[in-house]
Image 1 (cartoon, rainbow, N blue to C red):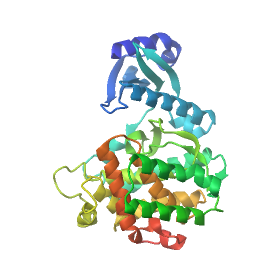
Image 2 (cartoon, rainbow, N blue to C red):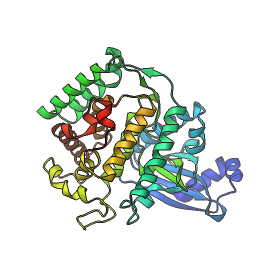
Image 3 (cartoon, rainbow, N blue to C red):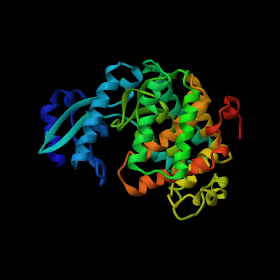
Image 4 (cartoon, rainbow, N blue to C red):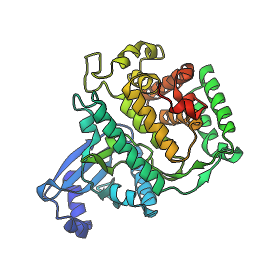
Length: 369
């Protein structure tokens, strides 16, 4: 398939290829077996410089994801924000190649943040972790600021637009225990208390985590995989996704060791979170948002500082963080994944008194734990 895609690109995008120095080789940089699986090819020019990227769908669900990414990229780039034009791929073609739908985009330079994240010792170093969070936060704030496109409130129309649909869909698709009913009842009450508070609208990436970020030096040089992107939405999903994912996988660079260097309190709290289920991400979640130490403090600052810069009160976390978890539960139709996020929501409700995310007071939310 890779030869067919290369031949198509060289013929149909000849001018673009020439402008980028021609193609001398290609590599497979991604292959997914998921329901929405795709195979991703990177075509290289002289000196191994990236030329273009082609994502080829393996399934009908994969085709839907490519269509969504193509539309999202066109939408967010059409606003003309410099941060998007310089760090998001340019969609070059959406065509069928030998019956398979393919999305061809410009290639972006940089090294995946995930590469350094998984380097042993990296996440044990507060300075290196802080640099990752600063780089991700700096790009994200610029993105949300440059694409800002109005405000909304949580009156009845706002609740119907931003809150009720998530709760209804979660109940229909995932389930509804007493704990979940109590949580979302409290979320609605908190949302109504914010009814006259203006909330910013901007473009969103929708899947802003380490695996989708390319580093050039100490800065974010490229942001990939825009299939969940939107041109106008509330920014909370992006704000929570990055630190949540960063906390999830701290132990992955040390398989089988039972501990994570530099994060002693994470292991001390593991038993507390295991009572809510067996999902491997539970301890990391609890540590990031309910724990103590330098890493939970960096996570708190990442969220609080970003929302403060956007003019969002800290009390909004109690509404939009649980909604974020509910949305994440519905992104994949995989039982273990959905049950895992469900366990996070129940854990959040049971332990809510011990996290700054549930605080109604900005002073409490910004104070050190």
